[in-house]
Image (cartoon, rainbow, N blue to C red; front, side, top):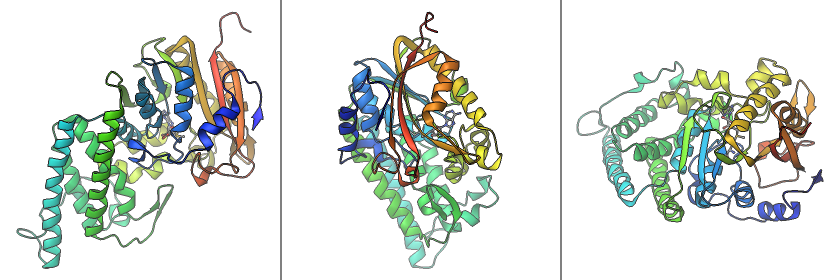
Length: 402
Ligand SMILES: C[S@@+](CC[C@H](N)C(=O)[O-])C[C@H]1O[C@@H](n2cnc3c(N)ncnc32)[C@H](O)[C@@H]1O
């Protein structure tokens, strides 16, 4: 690791907290796939260091909600937003404790899926269709996506839309969110999309019985984890989550946040809108809005050939929001990797230095580790030779500072 200053955290202590860990997907953390998730030990470390019980922690690029879950487990309140609807859905499901009565509603709803399973598989076994066998009801016409049968087997898509319809009939909004997140979590697996970070179609030979098995197993696991999570959350703590562009984030009161803790998109590294496109189409979300407003996407820097300056502009706008919402003694902690745009290497630290000076923040401490050295922090895609990942701690610059 590289040292600049050592005023806030002891790096050895930090390294021990994040490298010597076994379980990085406890409780609700494993609910939904998301590329470049934090391991929960990173937000936990800074929340414990820089906030107290009852404080508010804000993650403006909350992805799948890792920060929010950790904030609740530590008795803090949390606020999170993400431009991606699937991120907002997953975060909300992960960070909203359900009561035993609500979990009872999930279990009751599941009985409907079991009955659907009996009809589909009974119908299949006897080669039947329609009444008495495979359930009638083809809602695939509701999906506004031309290539849907390129990405999904026809029967699988019919079944998915039947499950989705049944979720939409649920009244309790938190239960509905929980079920939609369970549904969303399996979509890529039962589609022909190659993987969570590759948007190419391959033949996976997914059968109807596989869809039921995968979905029901997921549901059971989520129910059990929710029981444990709800029991572990301090009753008074709340997480608020919304789908929103951080550059326009309006609804957090001024000077109300103790800690902004986030891993922003790394320039030219991912296309979140693309990897979650099938999920968004099935759930009826506005893919275009996510595509055009996603900061840092490969689409912007590799396809549209935008200049790295646009990334700095976007982040400076976001930091303007942080400046408004954090308290005078609050902190911002950013975990950001280096990036390569137009074959030029950009240090994550240099980018944030520029952003900070434009938005009125001072860097209190920064250190890095090599992305090819680490095995557990993020997934393989981030372990690239020569790139480093930076932990940067900032505070608002006072009016008197230069
Ligand atoms: C590195 S990921 C965060 C992962 C998160 N820490 C987790 O543990 O799941 C960066 C996130 O920034 C989001 N993002 C990109 N542009 C955004 C924007 N304009 N406003 C809000 N979120 C945005 C992406 O959708 C992505 O989820």
